[in-house]
Image (cartoon, rainbow, N blue to C red; front, side):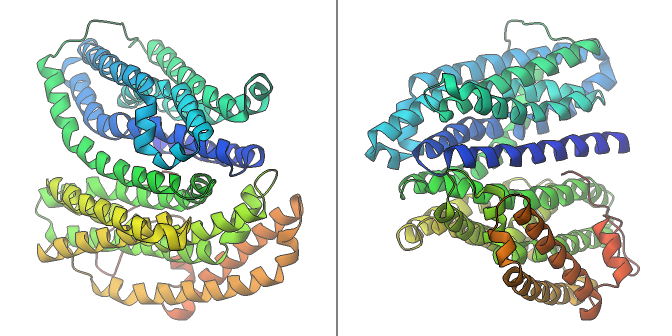
Length: 528
């Protein structure tokens, strides 16, 4: 298991680094203009469906089923089950892809209605979306094959395949652009080509382990009915999340040109701590909490919940304040070059600050949700999530004119806070969430240490203003110095506020066990 975790984590880290390189290149070549807006909407569309049908809901249902069949009935029966699922996905998602290609103008009117006021931009978005939409089918099939490989304890190919998306799109932008109508067209073709590359690599990998998939006629077998029933709760939950993201795109399309782009770049920055912290803690917590609930270890389950909250706050409080204070330098150094000018940097930094406000809530939602899932309740988080979507839409409409590009980001953050509050209240009323003495003592002291860090960052940012405004390596060194000053000041403030001793704080940073006196422990995961 440790080897698998390290493999997945290593390749995911490589993918994230290449992803930032890709976005920096896109910012330099496309900036935050109409072509960039059209491309990001075209990219968002297949990703919405991919996350709905592919990686989340499908994998959650398919991987346990495949692993169970493999263990109980052997590889041949497991391969037969995988081939049934593969054929079913080709049929359903193939029809969806064809429908999307035919009705893309109508889809675009729903997803980005604001583009209709600029016919050329609308037409470009439709064209780019038709180029990217086949990625939906390809990447969902790739998710199935990845699930097979993970079920066989073969993690390298499944993890490395995600790197191909960034490699292929970067190559398309650099070398295909001169032969296309625009850089946006080259990127869109690169997205579809990356899907072909990912699926191809995974099919070769699964064939090498003796589980090569054959094309067959789709059939609604009892196994497929069971798989679809297991997918249903995940589809509903994923649909709520994706609807929330779609609302932001719809509102952004109604705002001035470039809003979709500046929101995309801001979201990319805040997704790094959100993905690393939220996913890691939530992933590590769910199986442990489920075992404790199943065996009636009430106190241990309560300790696990508290330690997960404590660990999330330990990392997200300083991350949120750091992103708010240093949003300008971060966006400027990462993306401020080429066609992504100073005005775009300022707008995107404002959006990043608004997203950062909700970062602790985004992460803690992932920490509290397992409290429901471990007890077999998947309906309550979905109901609360639907309410959060409605609130997000209402706040977006209220904020869109006075706050412009900050409106969708701030609306999303406030909706996440309400979502978190509702989850916490319901868990507390059911007796499943009680803050222990260790958490009540440490949480305010961690916040105080994070505020002290923010004050140091403000001063350091002022001192490094000249270096951060330079070009080339100088500003990268300035950003590294700013990050180092923030980290050092936070870890220096933790012992001073009494939150943790220096050795404890370093142990937490290394993701060792988080344990109160006499309590049980949780070891956060290592996903990045």
